Structures are given as structure tokens and as C-alpha cells.
Amino acid sequence: MAGSVRPDHLTDKGVHVKRVPRFVDRSRAGRRTDGLFGFDPDPADAAEPAADETRTFEIHALGPSGSGKTVFTASLYHRLLIRRPEYSFYLKSDHASSAYLNGVYNQVADADEDWPIASQDVREWNFTTCVQSAAGDFEPLRFRLLDYPGGILTNPRGAQDATVSGLVDRLRSANALFVLLDGQAMLALLQNEELGARYLAFDIISSLEIAQQSRCPVQFVVTKWDLLDGRYSLDQLRQRLMLDENFRDLVRSKAEDTPATIRLFPVSSVGSGFAAMTEYGEMRKSGRPPQPHNIELPLLAVLPDFLQFAYTEIRAREVLLADRKQSAGRLPPMLSRQLQPLMQGMADTGIPRLRKAIMTRYPGLEKMLPESVFREVFSYAEILAQGQAARARMGRQRYADDLMRRRQGITDELSALQLIQMQCEDRVSGYEEANPTSVLAGGTRHFSPETVGQDG
Image: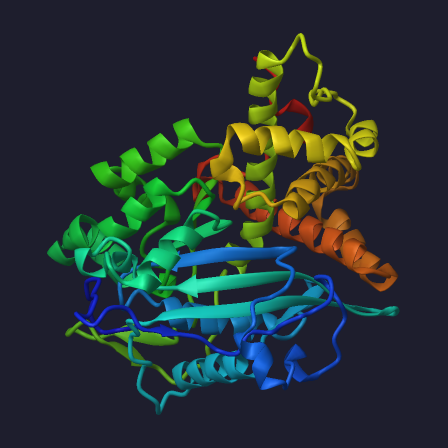
């Protein structure tokens, strides 16, 4: 939390990327590990790329320096490094990342410490989800979070920088975008102050440009919500943001051109009452312990939003291909109302053929939808349909309790992955139900796999 909002910045020397040793698993993704933090002590491994990117979801976090990206990440990790009663999993990272993020969180939480200095660096964080059951510990899913100022990718001085060109390439295959909106600037915007207007006009325009050029789901994450909580509602902020031409047109164009969900999440890394703004615009700590608010919601939404997006994309492409090849009969029909027979019939032959046909016609989707994820999408569609039916029958609370009971029955990575998928979907759809204004386009709550691709 900086005392003022600062614009994007790129030094003349280019972009400095800070990396921490990456956890490398040489076996199939999801293998159990028993080492501290899951960290392989062999230093040679830190420089090697992961041999299998299966079930790794990459998130790009954008926003001007001072918007709270690093503090957000530290608070998120602190929240989920312990398994909370409502979740079946916890997060872990390599030792260097864990030490750094815990250090940032401790600095924020300590009333005698200054706020962390806003970083201009590109940082990469790797998190592994862990599910513990009577049968052992399972690691079915990884999240890779890239944190960088939005202006890095659009600043002319970065055009020749190899790091920047690499980020652009990775952006095309990202599974989600987090665009962090500084809550201090949002407060100024709602109070009709110049700082808020300048923030929309100049500071986040590069982040909006990147969001326009991407195809994946987007989350606008309003940091420092404790500054607005009790004074303004999320609906009021949404209405004000939609008055801005650039923001409004971005949301509308993406809603028209892609099936990607767009969300507006209010989060606070410290919670209400932890700090107050002085007359000089600086944040002064009160001495109260931090109570993060909604901090894990953006991460939880990544999984259902991307799998829903990918499923809809695949079905749309299949329909177009089927129209072109109707007489040839090369592709298996995808529009069946019965998902279970569809999964069984296509698992070994139909899905690879369909993916090959789609990627040949639409090569831009190849990096975003490797075969492993392609298969996962159809599995998710099946269990989602089953889960929606069970929730409708049992009620939301009983369904959530039932999901938690299933944790002790987990025996492998696949069942652990499916449990995480359903808990994430249930938590996010529940938030949508209570806060419908948080969905700018798409959404999870009304998505039904059986109706995707049907006319009318």
C-alpha cells in the first residue's frame, strides 16, 4: 500500500525479472512429494524447465506500481498456506518464494514496520495445491503467477527487450489475467477527485490494452477495499467504472467476441480497520491484526472460469468444423445432451482427433489448450453437470459439507483434482449468487455444459 498512486514505469535498461528456484517434478504432474516445501535441493534443478506442464495454470497479474500486487500475493499465500476449514487443500511453494512472501506479509502486519516498497520488477511465483487424506498427500494442480506492471508490455522502450518479448509470448497462452485496480485510486474516482480520473485515463490504460489483446478470462481485482468498505458499494464502483469509455468498451467487446468471464472482485490484503488514510494520502497502521477480505477469491475463480471458457471455445469450434465437414462425417458429434456416454466414447480417440482438427484450423488456441488440458475440459464438464444437479438437490450448504467429507476418501491425484475443481466452482458460484454485480460478463452460476453450442 503506497501513499500515492504511481504510473507504470520502465527503466532505460529494460526489465529486470526476479525469479526464485522453481519446483521441478521430473515425473508426471501431481506426483506426491514429502520434502520441505516440496523443494528439490539439487541446485541444477532450479534452472531446468518443468518436464511436464500438465495441470499448471498460468496467471498474469497486471497493474501500475503501487497497486498492491506483491502485498496481494503475500496475503493470498498467507491465507492458503494453512488448510482452512472450508477448503480441502492448501498451497505450498519453494523455500525461497515462501520465505520472501512470508517476509512481505510480516512486514505489512507489523505495526512498527513501514509498508513494503512498490516493486518495478517482474516476479514469478509458483504455487502447488496439496490435498491431504487418509491415503496420503496429493499435489494435483499448480498455479504460476507472473506479477508485472502493465506498462512493461506496451512501453516502446521495451520493444527490443528479450524479457518483454517472452512475456508477450506467454501472455498468449495465459489461463487468466488479474488486472489490479488500486483501491485508493478507486476511492478518489468515486469522490470525483482528479487522482481517480487520471488513474483511469493514464495509469491503467496499458493494462486494459493487454486485456483487450488476450482471449482468456479477466478479473479486475480492486485492492485496498478496506478504504471503500462501508462508504461505497461494489455496485456503485461498477457503475462508475462503466461510465469510463475505455473500461466500458473493453468489457463489451470481450463479452461480444469471446466466451471469457470478466469479474470485479473487491479484496483487502489487511481488512477493515487495519490502516487509515491520513490527510496527506498516506496509509497509517492502526496496530490491529490484519483480517484479509476475499483475498483467495481471484485464485479460486481461475480454475472454473478457464475450464468453462475452454469448453465453450472447443464446442464453438467443433460446431464450425462440423458445419464444414457435415458430409464427410469425420468428427464425432459433440452436441449430445448425455455427457457420460460422450466422455466414454471420445476419451481415447475422439478427443485427440477433435483437438487436431481444431488446432489445424485455429492454431492460435494450441498453446492455451494442450492435449492434457483439452482432456481435462471434458472431464470437468461431466463432473460439473453432476455437481450442479447434486447442489440443486441438496442445497448449497449441504453440498459444500458433502464436498469436505469427500476429502478423506481421496486416493489419487485425479480425485483430488476433481474435488478442488468442484470446491472452487461452488465457492465462486456462491459468491456470484450473493454478489451478482461482481460479474461483468459470463459467470459460473448459470453455466450449463449441456446447453453450450445449442442454438436459441
